[in-house]
Amino acid sequence: MVILQVQSYAHWQDITRHRMEVISNFSQQHFLGEVDYLVCADVDMKFNNRVGVEILSSLFATIHPGFCGFHRDTFAYECQPQSQAHFPEGEGDFYYIGVLFGGSVLEVYRLIMACHQVMMIDQANHIEALWHDESHLNKYLLNHKPTLP
Image (cartoon, rainbow, N blue to C red; front, side, top):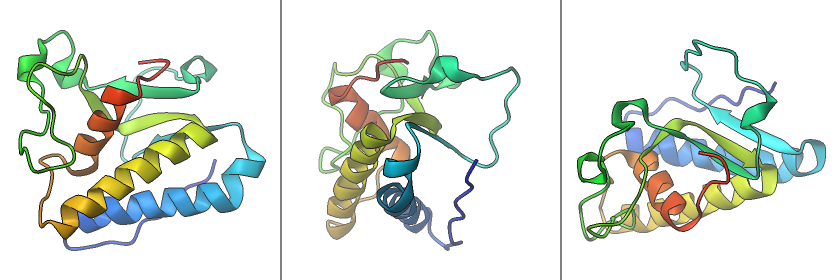
């Protein structure tokens, strides 16, 4: 297990951007040549049951427990049309929580890089998605379905 520490920041947007950069850099420098799968979990995650290798696939994400079984109209998708994380009306089938996702190192790297790029576009346009990196994660997963939800 490798724990990557993220510097403390005053703004949530800076924390999530830095977290993406740390995972991206470490993936390029170490993970691509050392491991097959990468699981990204927030340090304050509490697991109530055993989690094993059955979660591993090329790309997996965790359905947000607060939206499980609800219709997409209730999901917390980004509604600012100018945000890169915006969901067109009627789109989306699940709402994923941003605290536990993963997959092959290459797929996680692609996800992280794509999210980071659109977060930087939003930042340049002075836009902050409602749920920060989780909003961008959900938008990415709309077009790149996880192989294991």
